[in-house]
View 1: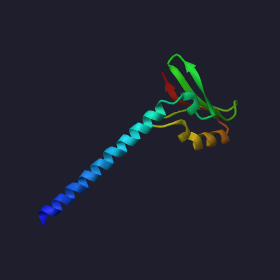
View 2: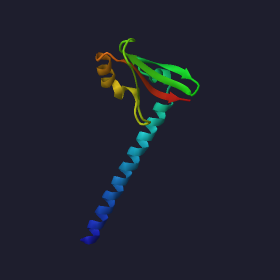
View 3: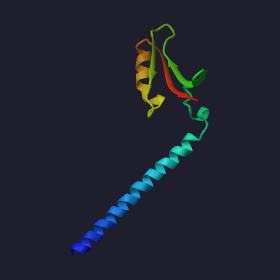
View 4: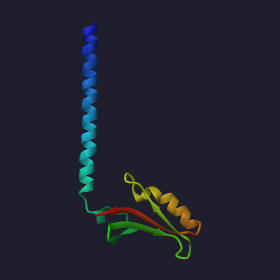
Amino acid sequence: MIAKIARRSLAALLVLCLLLVGTIAAFRLLAALRESADRDALAPPSGQLIATRSGRVFVQEKGSTEGVPVVLFHGTAAWSELWRQTIDRLAAAGYAEAHAAQITG
């Protein structure tokens, strides 16, 4: 009886480990496919890539050119569209807003 429970537990643990490894492999494959795509094609149409000495920077601008400028930067594991609601609210409040989304080499 105990041996049967141990075998079933071991089999369940093996299946769980295989699912975990498969999920991680699938995410890694999707990331590799996504990251090999052309940056210009992936960039949202609401912004533009600007060349700088440090690489290309994706910038989105919204709001009055007369307002107080606000620049929003995000961390590594994020992208510019996470700021969309903030960008819209800042522009509606009269700020001139520019959003630097990504610096690439």
